[in-house]
Amino acid sequence: MTDSARQTRMESFVEAWINVAIGFGINFVANLVILPAFGFTSLTLAANFAIGLVYTVISVARSYIIRRWAQDHLRRFNKSTAAFLSRILK
Image 1 (cartoon, rainbow, N blue to C red):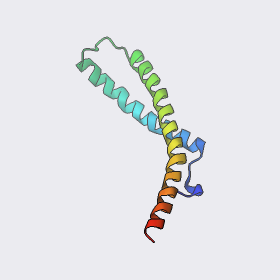
Image 2 (image 1 turned 180 degrees about the vertical axis):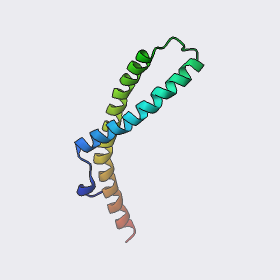
Image 3 (image 1 turned 30 degrees about the vertical axis):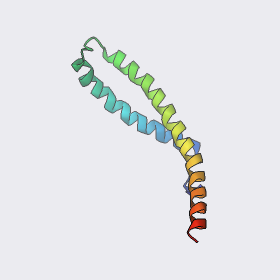
Image 4 (image 1 turned 180 degrees about the horizontal axis):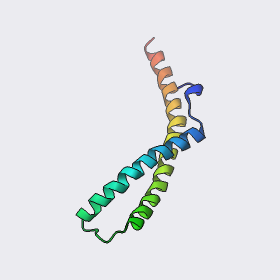
């Protein structure tokens, strides 16, 4: 990956939030259907929303950390792998 194709930290952060916001909406609705099927019938909308917010913060942190790690480490891995392959294929 070239440096011009590399995401900035802010771009990674925004991407993580967009990804998680979409996931939050899907999971909020899914919890309204799935949790009662497993006997969680006393969970209010507010409690469901609060639980979703906790998991959302965890998910944003996870997505951001993985994205930044991948940006740094996979580029180095690709460069070293390409150098190794070019040496053995000569």
